[in-house]
Amino acid sequence: QQLQSRRLRQPIVVVLGHVDHGKTTLLDKIRGTAVVKKEPGEMTQEVGASFVPTSVIEKIAEPLKKTFPIKLEIPGLLFIDTPGHELFSNLRRRGGSVADIAILVVDIVEGFQKQTYESLEILRSRKVPFLVAANKIDRIPGWKPIDTYSLLESIKSQRKDVQTQLDNYVYRLVGQLAELGFNADRFDRIRDFTKTVAIVPVSAKTGEGIAELLALLAGLTQNYMKTKLRFAEGPAKGVILEVKELQGLGYTIDVIIYDGILKKNDTIIIGGLNGPIVTKVRSILVPKPLQDIKVVKTDLTQIDEVYAAAGVKIYAPELENALAGSPLFVAENEQQVEEYKKIIQEEIASVKYYNANIAGIVVKADSLGSLEAIVEGLKQKNIPIRLADIGPITKKDITEAELTLQEAKEYGIIAAFRVKPLQGIEIPNSIKLIYSEIIYQLIDDIEKYITEVRE
Ligand code: GDP
Ligand code: MG
Image (cartoon, rainbow, N blue to C red; front, top):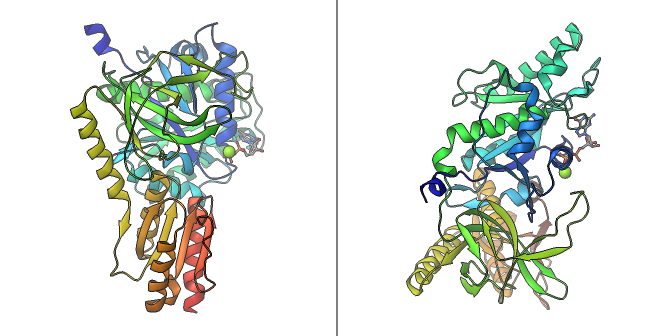
């Protein structure tokens, strides 16, 4: 009993950064390495996430033992599979994120780019600690890849001028972070990790630096987040990452469980398009164990219960209106059902917005997380909002945009994030429909249109 309550859960790790800086490659490398290094039966299967057990981290970090003596108590690390802003926004948790720590991937040669800055803003606003993976060190002129996962080992065999070049690149990142108010340094020169952001030079291609990266992720989360990571023996709490229709089964939700235990037949309360949904878990699904994790995870198998932290697919009735980005709670009695319904209602209300006195744009999005991120982004740019809501574009949205149009032409916009007009709804030519599947693209396009109309 006591041992259970002292047990730590897996920290949840996300990867953010500019396009093409190597997020996907880095995740693939970590997953690939884990598959090679694991013992049979060691790796649990996840949906929307990949689990790297501590035994694997210890094997990879073996060469670091002398420099970084860490005794790991966490069972491993849970990496969210899909990198980037879009899914991260759905990992929401009141005032913060379900993610415990983030890796900000920066191409060491290119340095900070637009989405690097955006990622940092998001991490700051969601209060997620992060470390920087300075990726693509193998592209530094003169770099000779060494067959090791350890950066420090590899550095020893690099030419002096190549080492200096690496340092110069790292200092440039230190400078770019300093401009944003972050104290940063190369990880092996840091005394106090609570005050300094660690920069880990890596190559997602060769694997150099993966040892230090994993050791730091594990060490930092375990040392500084113990209270947050303490496993709670109770009903599950989670967040909906995605809502998906499965052929032959129906609607399912992909959920990250960050606390407690989820069991088959549990009563869950989640957010829905038309208010909270109360339903019963019919099945908890995970991928069938595979040898190669790169094989598409389509073969699912049922389990009876799952412990945090984990990524699972849930099948239950009435999920067709489920809302990605919404919390998931398990209720043990009628009173809890009512309590959680209220909490979820309040949370959805806090993201939605309507003010008939404002001549502002209309925003429609497909999930709670994306709507929240878009509203935050628009506020930062001082773009007024009249209506922000979830779901397809309706007659009401058009009416609201038309009312805005009468007062301020440049704001006669319906901004649609991954939603389309309801069947039979025509958007009049006077209203500008701006559609995107990328949050920052949508905000950019809105800004551009407003400037155009004004000129
Ligand atoms: P993402 O958009 O951030 O997910 O970036 P990707 O992982 O798709 O990588 C973009 C490109 O950079 C691909 O062509 C990768 O092969 C390449 N790449 C990623 N990491 C490295 C690295 O460490 N070294 C080199 N040389 N190329 C890399
Ligand atoms: Mg990618």
